[in-house]
Length: 407
Ligand SMILES: [Zn+2]
Image 1 (cartoon, helix red, strand yellow):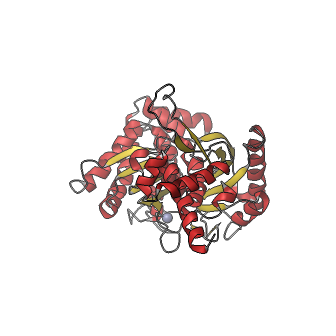
Image 2: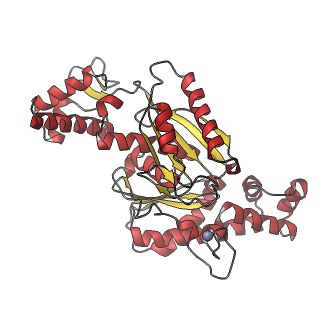
Image 3: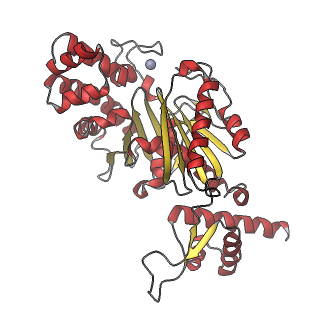
């Protein structure tokens, strides 16, 4: 085969896999129409992908017995798995997904960053091995790994850069370590970026759209998705909204500045403010919970809100308004199709989301179109681990590199 034909063939192979992965099952005729490749090019390369076991060809489910239903080409899903690793401030989740991003199994464990990267890496790999052993041999081949870290990340190098609270992780080579151990491609990114990417790929309504994913938890961060791709900025810092100053007179932030969004509306700030309400006797339910334990959790705050405690509800409204106002300003700047919310604080429920939504709309109306949406992630607290796996899958599919070897 001469080099032109070889390049042409690789392009056709990459295009066929990319189209089926993005659009779902397709007939050969549909693929020819969408891609612009001739029927004979599609046939030649589809047959090659079938013989390699990368695709399967069958009638779509539910069409059995129907005469006119043509066979469709689909991605074979049981050829191996992709690992997703999500590291948070206090916890790590490891999961295995199939090539379409479906989570097959996952496990999580508490993380103490003071233990250093070597020990945390040791537990992560032990969990990967544990999950892998639960699946059938052959189907459990690891084809790639995606990692989401709670810090700025050098995407090309695959490590954290000057993380705020992860001692020893600056330039710690997690990508190289995992790639060497599992002999597969590894991709590392900021965890909110991976969440946004997962949402953009797996929610049909957001596919190929501009999306703002906001994680509200211990930290507050944004993932910017432009036309279905992560926008990383110049130094991997894009979306670092937690340390934008929203009030120059108030709380000290751990980053050294005053009045950062995170210092006012993040988990620690919320707990401290709730404890103040308890100590000052302004909230009887929080005072009782605090007297029993000596501290308060997000769960306690949720319980107080559920019981209709007026002061806790006001606290929630106040902090949600600060977050919503900030997001509204970002919406004015970025003009996304949707804002998707994730992170622990989303579990406060619909009222908290409504407060944030009204804060956003107060800022962004009347400039956003009527189809603009504010929603919570439909994948709940699994979006981090699914998004990390999707970082790897989408990077491999879109690059087309080593497709035959990897998929
Ligand atoms: Zn700060």
